[in-house]
Each structure stands twice: as C-alpha cells, then as structure tokens.
Amino acid sequence: MTDMVTMANEAEVIICGYAVSRCGFGFRVINLHDLNSCSVFEEDGSLIETNMNDVELSVAREYFRKALKYMEDGNA
Image (tube, rainbow, N blue to C red; front, side):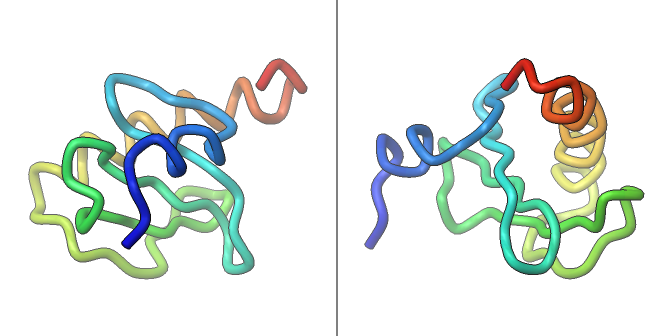
C-alpha cells in the first residue's frame, strides 16, 4: 500500500491535505488523510471517476481548480 509521504512527494500541488498530480487520464486528487479517497478529473474539471462522497467531492473539485492555476503557471 502506498503511504502518505510517497503520495505527497509525487504531488505537484498540495492544498489543505489534498494532493493534486497529473495521471494518464487527467489529474488525480487524493485526500492525504484517507488515501482510499480519490478522484480523477479532466483539465476542464469534468469528473472521470471517484469514490468520494458528494461533500468531499465538492471540496476536492474546488481544490483541484485552485491547484490547476499553479500547475499551469509553472509554479508547482
């Protein structure tokens, strides 16, 4: 099983405990406090897949949008 430190090191941006990184399908957002809680988004914010509940998904989507700004600017 992948540990929190590994996931954090692989992330391009971390916001409030959510790690955002690029993956083959788009962008992966993982809750570092619960590594089984993950979502995958397309660059436009469309959801590809998730196992998060609705509340956590809305939080993850908002953090993804914020993180994407830094990833595009090359600041990550």
